[in-house]
Structures are given as structure tokens and as C-alpha cells.
Amino acid sequence: MPTPLPDATALAALVARGEASPLELVDEAIARIERTNPVVNAVIHERFDAARAEAAGDLPEGPFRGVPFLVKDLRCAMAGEPLHVGCQAMKDADVRADVDSFMYESIRGAGLVTLGRTNTPEFGSTVTTEPTAFGVTRNPWNPDRSAGGSSGGSAAAVATGMVPMAHASDGGGSIRVPASECGIVGLKPSRGRVSLGPAAGESWAGASTDGAVSRTVRDTAAILDVMQGRRTGDPYVAPPPRRPFAAEVGVAPGQLRVGIAPTHESVDTHVDCADAVQRAGGLLESLGHHVEVAHPPPMADPEFPHHFVTAVAASMAAEFEKHAVTLGRELTEADVEADNWFMASLGKTIPASTYVNSVSWLHSWSRRMHAWWDQFDVLVTPVIAVPPPPIGWLRDAELGTERLTSILQFTPQFNVTGQPGVSLPLHWTDDDLPVGVQFVGPIDDEAMLIRLAAQIEEAAPWVDRVPSVFG
Image (cartoon, rainbow, N blue to C red; front, side, top):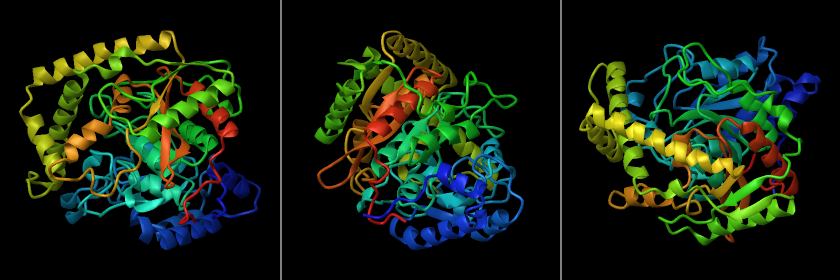
């Protein structure tokens, strides 16, 4: 088995002690990308010369000075750099960002060196990364399987050791699903924890947020410290942490009240996904936590999918209008993939009052969901109802949408409630496919999730388990 590379925290320490230079780290990462990317197709825009120049120059004295990084080709704008959002029309027009996003300002200020942009499904609208514009991102554990989405490129890059961590985003599971399918850590922050500015205040009616994927809990905590924080004009603001998230790693979480939900009323959950949750429950009991089978009753409310789809469809229609301004023309059916054309077309038929009423329903439903955390501290579920599916399974013209709906029953709810959730790599199938387990905490309490995740990582370490194509 390949030897794992140091995580981002360890690499930053090497630079700080003078045992490695930023340029050496960047050159090594570029070599790994050149060696491994042809296998998985994770990196779609290279900026190697610019990265080498930055590494050789005066980098900010941030916590990750000199550490190589990648950003997803969705949001996280870099002035003058490509921003194609997985879309062929945007690629053909070679659309480039006008300004840096607040996210990229934070990344650059931390001393990270961005080597390129990673693959994403068109508009980040599904949980497999197979865009027409840039081709399929393949799972590092089995190239015939999906790497997940919409942050599939970032997850595959981290899982193969191209970089120790990478930017990601999540509107319905797009950090947690690829983390699960690639065997790494993926934390979706609370709503308002990370600014979407200056281009946006919210996305998908407040359901979408930015974050990162990594191989270790301490990197996940430390990069959240970098990304988090209020910016002027943000419509949602999570309360600042009482201390840095990185300081929570190694702190005992105390005895927690844990509810586990190995299955879902409305979907057949694959035995490996259910077993992963059961085993996680057993591990938590061995660590002294109180565990019982329980979940928020509104989680399976049959009205939820309708109102969530209403919000997403209306948002997709608005996104098409935004891209039309960028392109200087309307997007046509020939410009975009069929499922996104359908969703935007549906969105255009939704009256404004219907959209507002659906958002109001989701707010009321969220209050019912949050009430469960008055009795429990953590909910444990599968991330997705199946192990990594075959390439093409979710893109099938006739069955893809039905399949997507059937397996994505554990993550979108917590985008809508705004709660933090993290996927941890705690299970592998008999044929060596990763299956993550999701841990959901109370709103704004990433600190507790990080303490628990670090405790689990120490008890059931995963960092040495890497795919054969690693590094």
C-alpha cells in the first residue's frame, strides 16, 4: 500500500521550520498531479507557472504558508482565471472571473498556493462529476465508479494525494457525498459560517455553502478557521467560535446523546451503508456515548422534496439569467445538459409567490427538525443510500433523475436546516469501495462535531488507508 503523504498541517510545519520551501512543496504537488490526474481527471484548469511564481515570492505568513491547494470550478472566483462552472457554453466563451471572491481572498491570505481548478458537474447540480464539458472524474478506488459530486474533482484530488486538501461546496450533499465516495473527510459548515460574497449572499435559498475536503480532522478544522467569518453585507452570519476550531481537536467531547438512523423510510438503503452506521453506533457506545436508534420525525416528511425542488428550480432559472448576462446571449437547450435545461425550464414556470411559499414551508419545517436536537446532540446517518455507483448510472437519460432522488435522502435536509454535517471514512465494502458516515450537529456547533470527529479518528484511524493510485 502507498505511504500517505503528510497532511496540510504537517506540511505547513515543515515550511515554518525551514525543512521545506513552498516551491519544493508546489513542485512535488505538480509532479503528483501530472502523474495521477490522467487516471482520475480531477484537475481541469492548471496554473502551474503562476503557482511556482507565487511559491517563490513573498507568500502571506498565514497558517498554511506554502501548502499546495486546489479550488473547485464553481464559485471561489479568482480574478482573471477561468470560471466555467462545468458548462460547455462557458468553456467555449472562456469566461473568466472579474474579481476575487471573499473565499479566495481567505485562501490566499492563509498562505495556500492554488495549483488549479477541479472538475464539477455542470452548475454543480448533481452528485456525480460527469460533465459534458470536461469529462468524467473517476473514483480513485475504482475508475469505473463515480467520485461523487458536485465536489468530485476536489475529492478525487485529495484522495489521490495531489494536494492534502481542496476547496469544495455543498448545496444538497456536494461536500459530504464525494468525501464519502472517495474515502476522505468532508465537513459542510453551518449556514452563514462562510461568506459567499461579493457575488452572492445566498445560493439555493440559503441551502448552499462553501467548505473543503481533506484527509484529516485537524486539517478540516484548521481550514474552517481560514474560511469562516462575517463579511460586510452577508445576509446570514453564524456566531463566531469561542476559540479556533483547530483548538477543538483533541478536546474530549463529553458524553453525547446520539441518535442513529441506519435507514430511511422512503428509500432502500444498501446493506453496506446501513452497516456502516450501525458500526459507527457501536464505536460511539465504546467511547462512552449514549446511543439509540432515533431521528427527527420531519426528516422523511413527504412534502420536503417538492418544496426543496421548487427552491432549486427557481434558483436554476435565475442562474441561467445570470450566465446569459455573462455570455451576452441567452442559454439555449443546445448549450446545457438535459437535466439542467429541464430544471431551469421548470423554474421559469414557478410564480414568485409559489417560490416564497415553498421557502416559508422549508423554514417552518426546519424549526420542527431543529427541535429534535433539544433531546439529542448528534444524528448519525448514511451519507448516501448506496456505495459509489458506476459511472453513468446517475446520468442515464431515462432513470438518472429517479435514481438520484432515491439515493439522496440523507443530506439535503441539513442544507435546508443550515446545520453542520461531516462525512467520515469509516467503512469499506468487500470490494474496497469507501462508504462514509454522516454526523450532524446542532446549528452553529461545528466545534462539537470537530471534537467528536477527532475522537473517532483517534479510535478508528483511516489516514493510512489510501487507494493504489495515491501519490
